[in-house]
Length: 438
Image 1 (cartoon, rainbow, N blue to C red):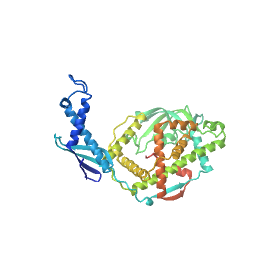
Image 2: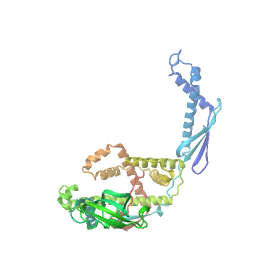
Image 3: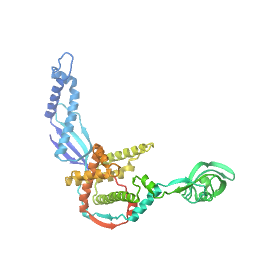
Image 4: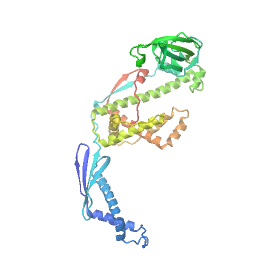
């Protein structure tokens, strides 16, 4: 099977393939014999239909199928022989086949770029050195208290940070205007839900009071009809609430899942969770720096085909997320996702190159460690581990995570590490969310 490969552009190629007429005739004859053994035609017993009869009835469709099969199989053979890394779906071009002649066709296609990991030693990675202190645990305890806070109705007067429930009706020059009223409106005074002069005018009033306030709207207010206006509001203060932050006692601790209700056990559990979160955050921080460095040092051109496919995948994921959140999906422009698509493809290509270059396979010990770490956040870790191991999709993801970790372990040995001490809460405030990449 003669063929000729030529490069059209950087990542675009064209291959011209000649299929000898002898190969075509052999394939046609083989298919005719095969069909003659299976086909039912009136007047002939099954398997006894003459070849000429089969050819007369099915000849055109057989020729079409044979040519399609030969085009695909010969193209596959050619790219394997030349070790071409095909990207996307190839495009076939050919003229009408003439009986008795060789069949010549052209296939246009895009290829993946050749990847070479360059200048790894130039990549600088800042490794955070973080120690969790008793003070950090104290701050986390206080955060837990605030998370468990609740509103309680109060007979006292409204003060800063009180939550009030009000009805109101606004008037300009004694006249009601459009959208000037509200019913059962909840607002926390001082949080800026309303303009400051409105909220501050409620301070010092108690539930059940009905009163009027005058509010002067600023000249740059978003609503044109209220800019610079003096508005009189009638207020019905229906409820005043105080935010109650619970004390750390046995009842509070047991609500958090600590059976013995002791502060010592709570602090131990908090430290364990903080330590797990910190380890993951440090790993991810390092990974993102390595990836940024890889992309900066390795400029890679991408075939349009895989960019378009990645954009479609991103669009599908975003649409599904919107639908899952109970909202109506809409159409997105490709340009919205192009930068992200290119970034994801380049990362995958670079990491896959490491896997290939070092002949990596997922380490079973790392797989088990990942599963154990994920399961540790549940009440019955052993039960969850057994459940996970039976889930094929979950295990596939864990397999990829293990492989990814091995890739970064190799890269970590090549890059330049700069250690930097930083406090726990400062570090955790600035971390970026991380997504698996392989």
